[in-house]
Length: 96
Image (cartoon, rainbow, N blue to C red):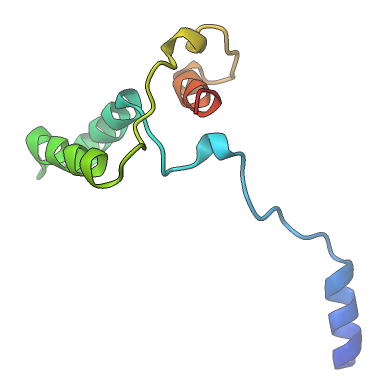
């Protein structure tokens, strides 16, 4: 296949999405999301202490302003997802 044909073939292929729903943006979080990542890190890294991760949480909240979402809890119970443990993430995204 010639170079020009390769370019033409590539352009006819579907392109993958370039972004996801903003709901799943990692740059915003809640206290519940903080607790979830802390719990998972502690499960996988026994060499770390909860206090170390709480310090990291505090630094995240203080250095990156306006990223802690609040007042989303009222929405959680009305959301239906296959994994109920993800309702808080979706509620957080909706309430941004």
